[in-house]
Amino acid sequence: MQRQSLVIANWKMNGSRHLVKQLANTLRNAPEVLADVTVAVCPPAVLLAAWQSEVFYDQVHLGAQDVNENASGAHTGEHSLALVAEAGAEYVLIGHSERRQFYGDTEQRIQAKVESALAATEPKFKVVLCVGESEQEREAEQTMQVVQAQLESALQNVTSAKMAQVVIAYEPVWAIGTGKTASPAQAQEVHAFIRQWLQQKYDAAGTSVPLLYGGSVKAENAETLFAEADIDGGLIGGASLEPEAFLAICRAAQ
Ligand code: PEP
Image (cartoon, rainbow, N blue to C red; front, side, top):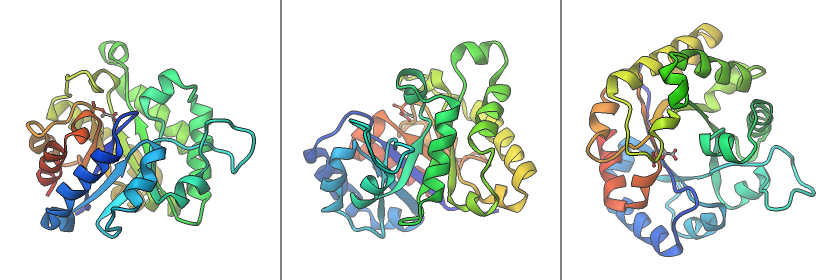
């Protein structure tokens, strides 16, 4: 089945208003790429408003890097779905490995965040669920087990109808920000496993879910990764801070 290619920038705790303008200009000058590839940018939440004044909504989408599972209340420092929606976010990353490792995103919390995001109606968010194994887990040959457990937990109450709003990003922890990239064959093996799991649970709806690879994707390796059958695009950290490199990655997804 033909799935639309998707490339998402994750700026993490980087960027500036200046970089918003630079990347927006670079993308604006490449309408032929944006016509073929869905591109979304997840800046720090405080820069969403700066992006909002730049875009060209139908061409570049905005996303939040995380969201609180509660609707409002005493959660100092957190952002609700309604707040990020007001700032223009249509996508939300959930379960990024940095949040799992350092900021208390347990499986239970990730499940709650996924369910809250999928329950929202204004807008109907696209949920980008991040999964992936650590180096130790890969060495112990537990990759598929770990990924399966993360999928089972986060999606346990998600119905087939809701899967139209879900994207899965496979991000091996050992490849994130390390310069070590999974080989196309390694990434494809896990993507094929995820696809099979999705199809078993959701039938046809599982076939339509975009599967992104993330972990040190660069202009130089994007094309071979994206050429794999079950890799529909990428979640891009470091290289998304360099407009030309990010554009080259988007081109590789065409
Ligand atoms: C990420 O943060 O999701 C990521 C994949 O980072 P990097 O591309 O820098 O490895």
